[in-house]
Length: 292
Length: 279
Image (cartoon, rainbow over all chains, first blue to last red; front, side, top):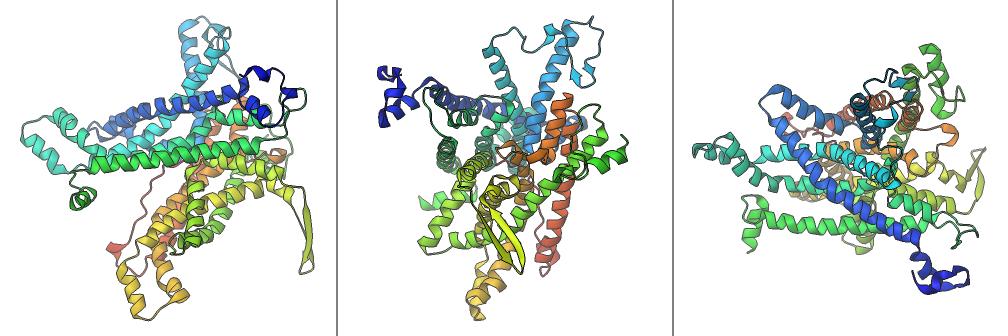
């Protein structure tokens, strides 16, 4: 980073620390915070979409569709989430490879499951074994995002389902009385009004999502936990910056990062709740009216 | 190997009894069910100890957070904030690294003529170290639930207690505590379920599985790695956990019934299940 960092063994004290904290590996560590934020930025809207689809399916008048929606939410919610994180990543990976295998090499005669092995033709591997490292990393990350979206989509579906039921019925009946059909009532009356009821649940879910991000580490993504373990482990003299086991300090740093993140989220969510409650016919809205 | 033989060999494998080597080739469904079920012993152990001890600590924390005195209130608030605001996964890692750095020391003492030994090395083992983390974590979550319940004790109950001249510990034991528990119990049931689910994180977060003695998910992960087939072991774990969740619900439901026994039927609070938390 700095010019004087060329030979770290001559450095002392603060200068050593400054060079140590700005070396290449540490830049990757700081970059991995971006990975976590990126995961949150993608997962939150995608799982909201999954949740919306799940909630709409659960409300459907067609029984099979309603069953699928209910099954989705109840299965994912009854089992420890980490089981799903471990399960979905392999299952999705194998599912994609199997589909590609069926499409690309139909002449392949050997069975895909040979005892303890899962064998597909080399052309169906995902990503191809010749692909560069970055493609592998992006593929892993995409699988992780998709897994998070499936699991959190189920939770979001539950919240949105409750919120849709919480919208006062007279509102919908009035819409019908004005001659709106089901579709119009849903999009113009139900959806705009459900958010105030969904917000506490969705806020909770956001906090849980933040606290679930360290599980990325288990999915083989080089996230902040991976780098904290990697960088914190004791380094012998053959490394440029030898130091004893510092993992404790790295994890302390992560702890502070998460505490700050959840605290900021809490404050922001409180503000949004106040905004949304304004002028609503709820207890919170009434309290705000009295204050004013 | 027949099903009964694999039951004999692996039923207590997670405690280090029975066959030493885990199955390597020709893994049968039976072996998977038995070994994963054996790992479940650890999940039950972690959850039971943490919940039992955490219950009392959480009550103390909730009282402290509700106190007027800032010397009591502030530490309780910070404790709850730190443990609820950060991921359990990070807490496990942090605790493990901290325990590893502790100086190796041991003490021996005799109690009632029996020699006991204790050493700080035990803290790096899952059975003690992870239990401590889970205990602190569940205390923080439960304390927040109990605190909320303390705040919503009906004013009339407390005024009635004052009118009858109940004060201090007597008032707490007869009025405040039972009412707090009654109000908090549905939420506390959910907390117990989340904690039980959270025990699966232990062996994926720093704490090594000593001599391959791990929990249900540890063995499921082992089988998934060995057979490249996630479609058998993970549904088995899921099945076990759904069953155990039902057991917890019925146990806590019985306690809930007892806490509400003095109320007329229609005023009793039902436990509403909201299985949706990760820590």
